[in-house]
Image 1 (cartoon, rainbow, N blue to C red):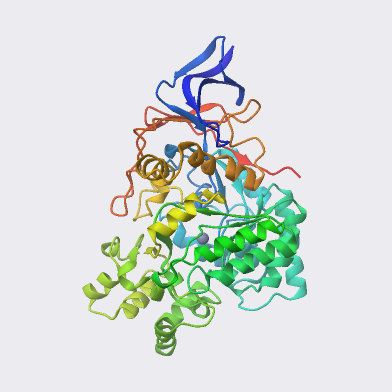
Image 2 (cartoon, rainbow, N blue to C red; image 1 turned 120 degrees about the vertical axis):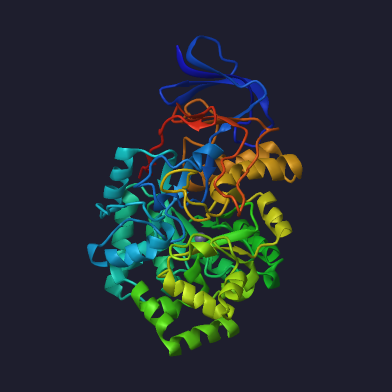
Length: 534
Ligand SMILES: [Zn+2]
């Protein structure tokens, strides 16, 4: 007697091979048969006319900003996502040093919707993972160790090199976190304190992650004017520390830089030829999403959020920030300049709700200020806690990245929901639509990818990248993370104006062999923490 049999689906097994008709049998949370399945089952799902695939794996997710408070977040599971790789861009909620906890809280605050209460009752990554395990999560979560979080725990927001003793402390914390089951080290080299690190510090830490079998995952130092050297740095870290590399949410940001991924792809291909294992992930949208504070230079954010607010009040500092935005600083990714004020859309605000969904050019016009002043005043009023979408990516170039064999799909979205505490502000629609969007627009409408190749990029490509050994394929013995969708009906419906919309066409989602989505609704929370075994 099987627990579940899914009958008569078109099986797209995650390998990239052509679909075939078949059944999938599930027992005790595992797939036990794929193909023709005879014999009775406690539950039978009819998949006539549906594609049956491994549950999607989100290569790049920020779901962990709220998972300790809201385990039933629905925005990913409703897309058919069953596993998310989290702790990205150097930002994570553990490990915590009680002495610098206030700094960590202040820095992560803009990412966490108001009304979501985290109790910060953990310190080590192991404590934190136990906490998530005890409450479950809608998806399975594979955690990375955030470099920014490590640096904050050891040296706060200090804009300098670590001393030898501090570097040793970071390495020890990283080793301890890898032993707890993390899958690698992530960096966010545009955000303080990550941006204060030189390459050598990152190589030293990457060696520790490599020794534990992890991956180096990087939001690189610059995605605009200095994109090419930033990719070179990531490859150099992989080559020197002998660690696989995943370049996060790859793009060329800003019109002046469009076309540069020709060079970065050539660099990655050349690196692979000489034995450096580098891949990347990409989201299927032309806007990125980040903090409003990412528009001002790193020096103005050093120290603490309180110090940043002092700079925003001080006439001399303000003049210097405005000059830096107008003229640039060598090595700093000047997002406001590369995007342009009318391509920066305000996401979530706390104080100025009336500006949500407006561009900074519109905010400036409405408040009768010059755009740079409007930005600085807004940052001050919001105490740094606001997010933005930046329209800086060329659609054609993004398509080239998505179609590239080295690309996996990652949403870069956070956990959200259409009701409850997560239904706030204007999140980027990728939180609700990434995976159905690839299947609707880039498979069905544009034919950029075959269905099988798209599913591979959403499943086994990421499982293999991170070493999730029993996920990402429909094979006997694998975890029963399964999605059944209608290939003609599947559609993302979330937009920048109306992000709070679940996709259409997802019929069933199983996580660890249990029904999580059916009848267009969340049916249960069956995900857990995936810990890397040493
Ligand atoms: Zn990032």
